[in-house]
Image (tube, rainbow, N blue to C red; front, side, top):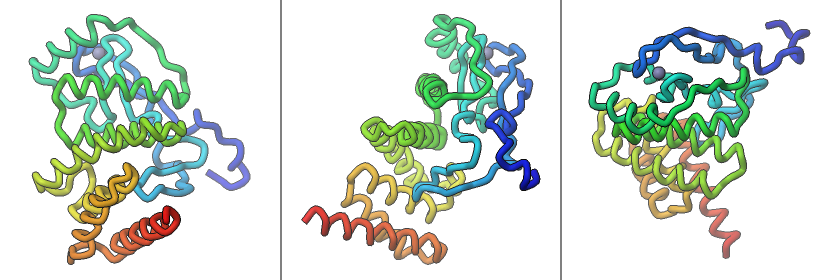
Length: 235
Ligand SMILES: [Zn+2]
């Protein structure tokens, strides 16, 4: 993409349709995919929520079947479903589902609706913590973008619970994070849900972790500084 065209881009320029087969109803469906190669990162929040120019890929991360209502994150949507999972989703989602089309570009509200359906499907399937934690974290991010901090915190608290189970299980990497990155994430999210005690506990683990990269420890120190500043302000 050359510089002179820079401002001519729209969200639609970063999207394309791909045909896949729904793992539940086995119908061919079109899913909208983000062209990752063209993305330009502007910044990241401390818990890794990325902001890109022109498009928010997060809005497109849930794939959904227009025919049967099955929805999941892109990374797991095509995974085979057990017959017990299929039965449950048929009963509790598909039997009430009416065929629907989604707009070519996804408004925040529409993206949130699709995440809610994906979370409901994941809940019904009793999806693993690695899947639940990422869904909840991404939903929390959408609520952050919407400015709804109360629901954001509720999603984050649930994500923290799922991340803690993953930490205890210890099969790293989990959800794309090695052990130190997960510990930082738990510290960061605990701070965001106002659980200072937990946050400091995770930071303690991070500071004692010999495997943790210096940049991650630095982030941890920034967080600790932020907490001490907040304490001063609170008096
Ligand atoms: Zn389907």
